[in-house]
Amino acid sequence: MKWKRGPVIGRGSYATVSVATTSTGALFAVKSTDLSTSKFLQKEQHFLSQLTSKNIIQYKGFEVSHHNNNKPMYNLFMEYATRGTISDEINKQGGSLDESRIRSYTCEILLGLDHLHSKNLVHCDVKCRNLLLCEDGVKIGDLGCAKVLKNSETTTSQFSGTPVFMSPEVARGEEQGFPADVWAVGCAVIEMATGCHPWPEITDPVAGLFRIGYSGDVPEFPKCLSVEGEDFLDKCLKKDARERWTIEELLRHPFVCNYVNNSSYNETRDSPTSMLDQGFWESLPEPVPVVGFSGEGPVERIRRLVEGVPSGFPVWEDESHWIAMMKKMMSLKA
Image: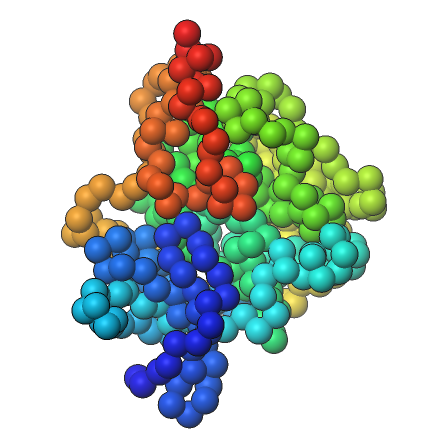
């Protein structure tokens, strides 16, 4: 396909996103990074190429190109989100969305996650910056942190994502399964209602991870939400992952059920569960830059989480660095 790269519209943790045009003038998005550091992008390409939900960003292909310096670049072609992200929309609306829009957007997010979970995929990084607004609705994007649950697994022992949106069990280094995505949905609802991440009072990343994982606290529910909205958050933000509702159960909750289109919902459930060709990932060069734990105490777990994060990995909030994280961890340990 002949195409021309346009202006940059976003910079993520492992790639740059630009608008591009085909020779006929059609718009699409291209996500690019050096071929040598493209494992996350290749993983995202593999997942997107096998997903068929209208609530997941559409895959359009990939190629390896060379710039003037002859450095090979890996390019992932995707549907162009004409209206940006939900984060962009929050800013346009003055810092928050009205509840009717939150309900509608949340329903579409759940439909996209329902399709992912039916394929044994955990997204691992649900937040408003990764939720895209297209002409035909909300679509989940950025599957670079997603993971396949193998065989009969219900959780994974390796962790990724943006810490401020992590569930307690992920912050403790115990597990990251479908309930972690449910927790993140609750955080996204708070973000839509307030314009802030779910822990706005926390400024220290280390203290934040400890609070999420070990304090027993949950994020404060926005006072602007209805009783139904508060109850929906309560079902998402249970401290015990086993008590959280599933995506399928949440789709029947009064907060969103009136927005569910039966045909769209059934479409996401018709496809059989797939392992998304797990052997493909076993054949790629190791290691995948995620973090694993094996029984350490809380300080050691968070230290390992910090040490295991490469420089471009999703971090505390809005891709900013975990400031002085190691110094604080070592002082806590001492």
